[in-house]
Length: 400
Image 1 (spheres, rainbow, N blue to C red):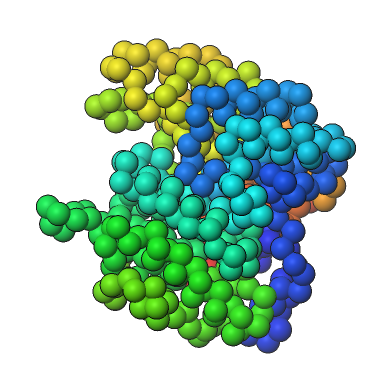
Image 2 (tube, rainbow, N blue to C red):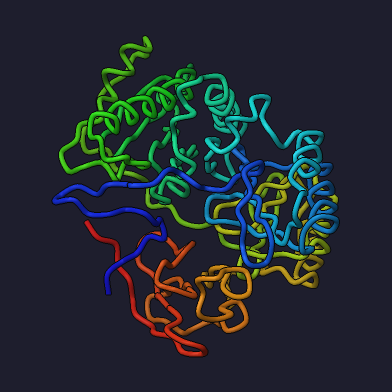
């Protein structure tokens, strides 16, 4: 069965893939009209919510939406079931809560995933990169799907097929940390202080390559075979000292499992079943110093005073309906929106989805149609609706 990445409007032209429509990716200000009402997608470039922002989003979902929040595979949050004419009120609520950038035209280009357990230095890279993205006019040319990853060296978010990756390296000296900036298979070592600017330069190099290719590519992997992305040249023009690292190997990282995390101080990690929570569940994440949203459709609560306090909160979140154990059969089970929210869906996949015993522990994704929206990266068990109540199950493997 051929793979369909869920990104519509790509047509083949010889060896090249050509996008023949503009980017209609939804945002917090550009709403998508779905069968169950409007949808707003909120980018969280650092992956962090304050307690106040959690409460504002819960109240917003109750007042304007369907009383739920959805989590995406990029660590975004979605509000669904929004009524007609709510756009201005929604924007005001998000703006007042500090959930929109100063340059609101840039809100859809703030696509970034950050290692949920990253320390202060790496998290600061994401904050700085977000500020740089929102300060440049040319970054508005990036599509709503172009993805940055800021990885603390574990290889967790670097494994999510980003377009530009900042990968923190272990300190090579007592004085300074370095980072690899990666685009495709090309990697360059830069000083940690230059890492955010290097990621921005790499994105600019992609846009130059995309214009030269003339195929309307939104992402690095959509560039024609052999198309050069002159990262080195753009780093030089930005006055960033860089060392080419041939054959750089990514750490073999993976998704953050639910349960207790860390030791000093301890924290907890939970997953949302099928990537969706009620506002009551969302509020149950509090109290917390901060709430980190993960690209595995879950949350991290850091900074408990001791293990006993972390275990107590984990038990409470289990009672609230979160996935809190790594051995839960629901770990790795995801689904698209399905009916009634999506007109293209052939089934109510969220109602039909269930865990499946699979050799090798592959993730399982339930889709209402052949677009397979939201499917995992790498290999996965592909369960696709073919008619009312009927599904076809295969194993999908990455190409290339």
